Image (tube, rainbow, N blue to C red; front, side):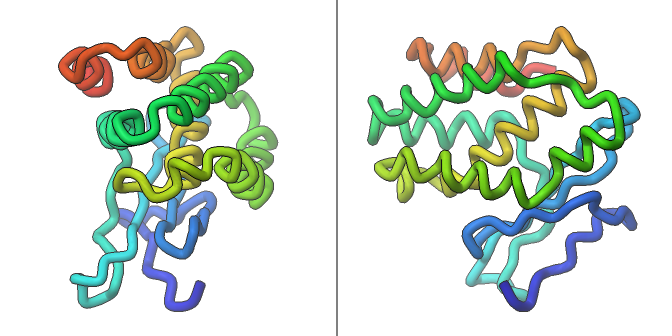
Length: 179
C-alpha cells in the first residue's frame, strides 16, 4: 500500500499498524485502562476526502454489531457460522499479562490468520459496510482488550450471543452501547 495516511493519534505512536485489504488501516495504541490495554483506531479509504482517507476513527461495538445485522439479513446461515466461530475464539482468549504477549499478538501473523479465516466466509465479503477481514481483526482485538482490562468481561460475548439468538435490534444495540 503506497501513500499510507498518518496514523498518529493525539501525538501517540501506534504499537502496531495493520493494513487490511488496501481499504483500511488499523492502528493499535497503548490504552490507559491497564498496563496492556489496547486502544484501536482506524482509517478507511474515502474517495470524497482530499487525502483519500477518512479521519482517524475508533471502532465501536455498535458499528461492529450493525454490520453483523446487515450481514445476517443478507446471508443468515453464513453469518451465524461466522459468529459461532467468534464465540469459540472468545472461549480461548486470554488477557495480556506481559509485553511479550502483546508483541506476539500485534504482528503480521495475526493479519495472516485473519485473512485465512475470512476466506471461509466468502458470501459475506461484499455485504455491509466493512470488510470481513477488518471486522474479524477488530473483533479479535476487542475481545483481547476486554479480557485484558477485566478478565470477567462479557460484553462482546453477550453481543455475539444476542446476534446468534436473533434478538431484536433494540436489545442488540443496547448491549453494544452499554457502558
